[in-house]
Each structure stands twice: as C-alpha cells, then as structure tokens.
Image 1 (cartoon, rainbow, N blue to C red):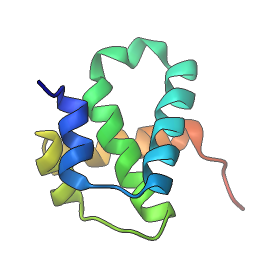
Image 2: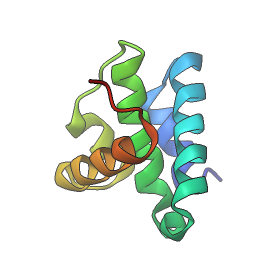
Image 3: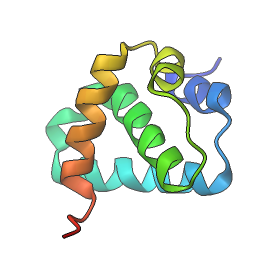
Length: 91
C-alpha cells in the first residue's frame, strides 16, 4: 500500500533531478522548522512544485495540489513559506 507521499510522487512522475531537489528541500526545511512535521504531505507537495520550476519541468499549482489532495491556495501559502526558509535570497 502506497503512502500519500509515495502516491504524490507516482502521480506527478518527477524526473530524478526534480525528486532529488524536492527531497533536499524538505530535509532542509525540516531541519529549520521541525514543528511543521505534521504537514509533511503539504511540504512534499510544496517542495515538488518549487523543484519542478527550478528544474524547468513546470507543473501547474492545480496539478500539484490535486495530486496532493490539498487546495491550490494551501499549496501557494506553503510553497512560499518553504521558499522563504530554504532558498537563498537573490538581489
């Protein structure tokens, strides 16, 4: 039986580069914000969305949110939060 996170990766079929980057983002985020562990599915969806963009394999917010079983607005809120924590600020 697949977990929700395994199903998310299966349904969105990310490349190896997207998957590796996504897992790294979740790991980095959890090191800095361990209190958000109860939102692990949403965090993986957020990391995948960011990783698809960074690896030039874009998926829509609706696609990622639908596969994760969350709303697009929830995805938007959490990917922005994750990005602010784990991605360097460029000036």
